[in-house]
Image 1 (spheres, one colour):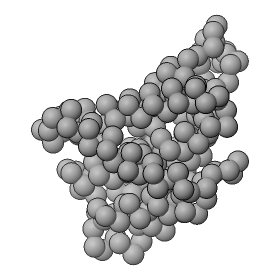
Image 2: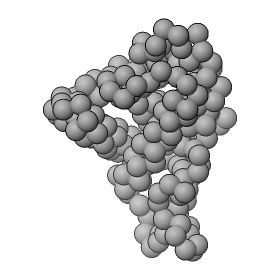
Image 3: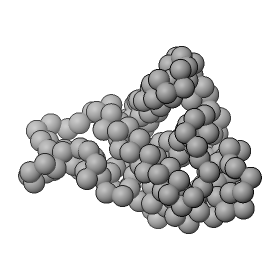
Image 4: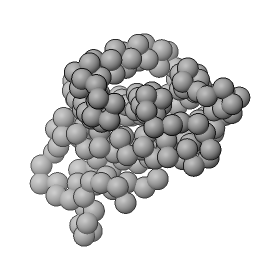
Length: 197
């Protein structure tokens, strides 16, 4: 998946919060693309609560990846500001979509997302991440989390699919997007602002 992630004008350095706002949009697109791919591959993810369970886990995973990249690129204060804003923006976007479609309170959807995010963060923090990306445990944990919502017929396949295809593609896209968003050089190509290709 390709996304546009260069600032059209870079007359000043962007704040961590501005970078997080742009990244929240990109992370949402990546998660949606991953779910679309799974459904196209005939995994049973019907519209409804299960769809949002899958989306939530993908989003949390992708925020963790962005945070690990920020760890290497930003100082501690900027990283904290970036990750906090990113998690809150993603939680808000998720809550608005889930609440509107399922007829639920946005506040309760956001609170539940944040609770799950914090729970998952404690486990992801124990997993490795280096210049080449997440380690085996990082990927496997996402697959394990998705098993909780998986249709019985997909249980034997979902972890391999996530670890070999969807999660690595998501990591690659997040990595490219973060590199572009943290680049202080302006892009001069027409139409090269933030957004999906």
